[in-house]
Image 1: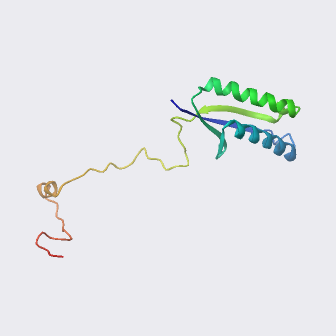
Image 2: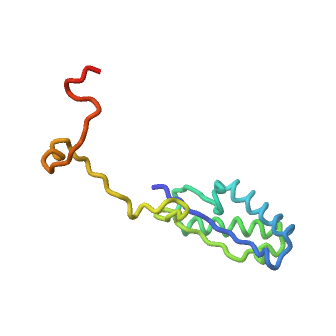
Image 3: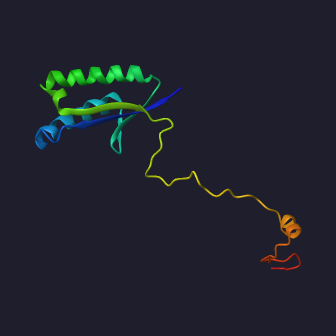
Length: 127
């Protein structure tokens, strides 16, 4: 069974320089894309057979590798969390919870309830 996870990373732009954050972001992006994540919208997304705990351990290991190359790497991260994206709702899509149910009604049903209608092509029309 394939799982879909989203990894969200927020850097400390309020207290760190934009150039330093850009450099850290580039490192994160490179390492996670090499691992198999895709960057979609504002999350790193991966489809995997692994569970959340296994992916979390892998991401921690990848971040530890970055820490070896970028001193104070973890001080740049404000938030970092992983979510199982199965069942998550994209709130940018239209709300379909109150959709109109459409019922197929035959012409016989319309006749029975007395609804007037006009057919484009009548039975004896030769068009």
